[in-house]
Length: 227
Image (cartoon, rainbow, N blue to C red; front, side):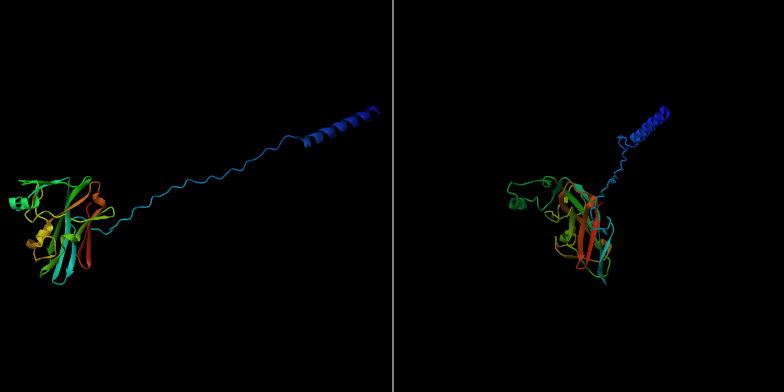
């Protein structure tokens, strides 16, 4: 009798222990799902468009005209000056000075200075007649400088006999005999129009992004990059 009672007690304990294990209050292990990471986005800067992608280099020639009236033109070099000294027999004469300069006579060299923050850009132009007849020559006004979206016109010297210290030659438009208006160039190397044009532009300009643009005739435009 005692033996059966003992077995019954043991059985009850086993059942209690069994159910106690199944109803354990220990929380189950939580498995975290990894959050996907977004890869970093690298922004590529948009390149600045080149205004004249087919621009010629310095000393490259552009052809204009047709038939027996043909020519070539080039911009072959440039110089930058913070100021320049010049003289002129006619400008420095007493009559010219009294008519134009209320401050009195100036002898010898005169100093030309740009506005604050600017420099003088000397551009050298050459136009050659390669035909057999006289060819129309683009005027000085047809050569402009383009930089940073702005266009600059040339500034004329006082007269055809101006001499600039350290600069050889004369202003281009006087080479074609009209002082800034339309002229003609005769055939042959010896008759080429070769001279400088002066532009006042910001001192911060960069040659690689500065261009000389010219409408050589009614259907031909040429562009040269300075650097």
